[in-house]
Structures are given as structure tokens and as C-alpha cells.
Image 1 (tube, rainbow, N blue to C red):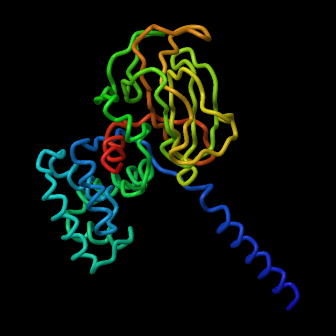
Image 2 (image 1 turned 45 degrees about the vertical axis):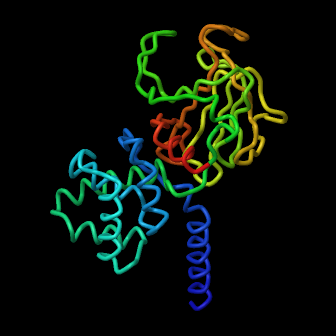
Image 3 (image 1 turned 90 degrees about the vertical axis):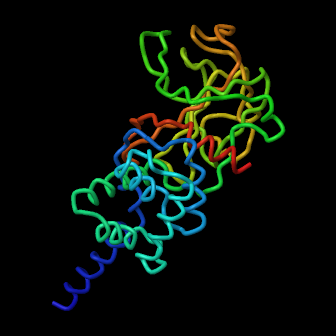
Length: 282
């Protein structure tokens, strides 16, 4: 009887260890439209760095309360300070969620937390250090705006799933994060393109398209470092392999997120607010 109990205890311990080891594999989150205003993104990032409160909770409150219409840099700082006071200085998610539940009516609190949970999955932190996809010395030769959702007709009517960063042909393109190259090659729409999975947040993928050529050593399976050259600006795409010249040179940059780590199906989110944060951090 004692021996049987010992075996059961050992099995339970092993199962517990396996759950702990593989817990990240079973994480998941909803991917929704990222409505974060680009002009406020760096202020949410600053509040997160200063207090430890996730930007996602602060933004979700403003999204539900006013659709960001009343959000300002000052109000974001004040909201973060209020949150720290409510939590007694504890910036952990559980403490933040309790503060929101106690500070808002039930239905509104649930809506805020639902949005925040999705945003924390899609963009775990705005305070983490990511690289802008171009060197600081090249910024004067780069221009971009929010082209998310713009109409595109090549290959059928569709909406633009990324940000176009206009640049001179041949300018180096940098990996925004540490990661693993999951695909490299020709895409009928994107031309010569590379997709990188974020090493720290493997639910997130970065798509770099319309290159003129790839960086040295860039192959599927290659581990890239943040700031590593993965390719060079070009005008490839919109046709069979090797097609160029259909549009001005630029980098098409996209971010795709999967809802769980066991799936390869990915949904696009607007990269423009994140690019503005990363550019400001250079």
C-alpha cells in the first residue's frame, strides 16, 4: 500500500513537472484589431517603464472610456499613478486586474480586462527594447505613414496588412528582435521576403518584404540578433520570381500573431504604433 502511494506520488510529481516545463506551449490569446493611437503609443510605453504597469491595461481603460478621445500624455501618467496607488505599488497583472475590478462597474471592468488580455498577448510589452528596422544614420532617408488597411488591387481587392517604409534601394534592413528565420524566399506579392519568429514572444512574427537581396547568412532556421542585417531595400514583387520595378523601393513591414503556440495560423496587426515607439527609442 505504501509502495503504491509512493508510485502515485511520483507520477503526480512528474506530471506537475511536465506541466511546468511545457506550460508556455499551451498559452493562448485572442488576436483583435490593435486600436492603439500611434501618437500616444510612446507615452503608454513610458508609463509602463516608469511604473511597471502593463501598457495594455492603461490603453484598454482609455479605449473603453473614451475611444482614446480624452487620452493625453498627462492623463496616461495620471492613470498609471492612480493604478499604482490602487495596487499599493504592486504592478503585477493580478493586482492590476483587482484594481480595475474595484475601480469600475462590473460590465465595464470585464470589457477593459478582455481588451487588455488580448493586447498583452499581441504586444506583451511596449517597454521592451526593440530595434527600428533601419539604422539611425539612415533615418533621414526613410519616410513612412500609417498605411494599414489601405486598398490594394494586385492579386485581387485586398487591404494592406502592414506599413510601407519608403527608402532608397540598397539601404540595409535590420531585424527588430532576436528571433529565428522561419521562411526566406520569393513571394508573389512581397517579392524577396523574410519572416522571423520573435525569440521571446513566439506568438509573434515579423515579415520583411520587397527586398533587393538578403543579408549574409540569412536562411530558414538561422538565429538572428536584434539589429542584424537581414536584407536590403528593394522593389521586388507583384509578379513571378525576379519581378522588379512595379513600385518605388520600400520595405513592407508586417506583424502577425497566432492565437496559440500550437497553431501556425496568424493574424495581422497594425505595426505602425510599434514602429513609432521603436523609432523614438533609437
